[in-house]
Length: 435
Image (cartoon, rainbow, N blue to C red):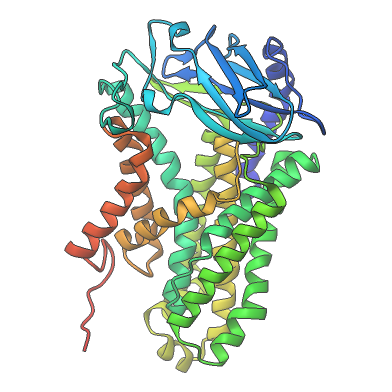
């Protein structure tokens, strides 16, 4: 089912030639001595052509400009590793397009030779932009088109977030452990996709599949060498949680050491976009949403219809009773670790595919949202994590209609606090008597 869902990505390879041709006005090929900074400029009406974007470094000894092509693409070749300033010349924007938030122009970007980095500017149609700097709280006139576009972006992010959150919820349900290293499993999936797709030049379908398999294998390895021995020694949950924090930090620094601090492009070319009514998303975004939906349906069927799935739910309800009834608890927990890390790896791969970017801190940025989604839906319930993820995704993306985009993750924290105050058990969770 996963392979069938990802077959559509093959079409991206066929588009590479045409995308290269249309971007001929802005050629850039990353090699050992040079890198690329580029992106696609578009609003809900389509690509925006003829806009000037300037890239300069922090030492003021490099400055190059590019003009967006007919398909909205632009790119600038950079000489090496540095922190670059990317600025959009607002005077070259057409009258139908304005920046949603002028506080994010210019953009600071760390880029290196041998890699492509993506910079996106959020444009809106027929809106009044922010001019109040970082203290501004509105991002333009809210129109039905913008509402639908942001809602679609929220569904996209929510579906991908759900892949990781469901795994986190299953781990908590079967072991009682809140794993703070789960975000790094998302990062692992994204970075492995970059390795297989860009560095090893595998087809994107095989790159994603290999990333998921290796992510799942990392879950098996963790349980074999770490979690099962600690369970046998009856180590407390607080101590186990501290172990996950340490593991998270170690993996973050390892990822940064190996891949650097820049955002890495996982597709060989900038993908095209499709419009469905007023909604416009990239082709990889549609594929990622479809794949995530199919996998989540498959997980639901697995939990409901299979013997192993029912055993997993039994352990979540009452581990002692499940063990007394003959269920091999250790075996099920190991399977949960494999499933959870595989889902997180898939979430990271699809996120990198949808945004055409992978970075060492990708999972860290999602960790708060995962915990907010799991708490909102109900701790330990896979279906609750799915519902919570969709709500968090939609609310976070739609909040940018009224708030600066830099504050959108703070909305998730506010939701987390409100849920704990009003309904601590979450939407699908059950209230329990304590004491």
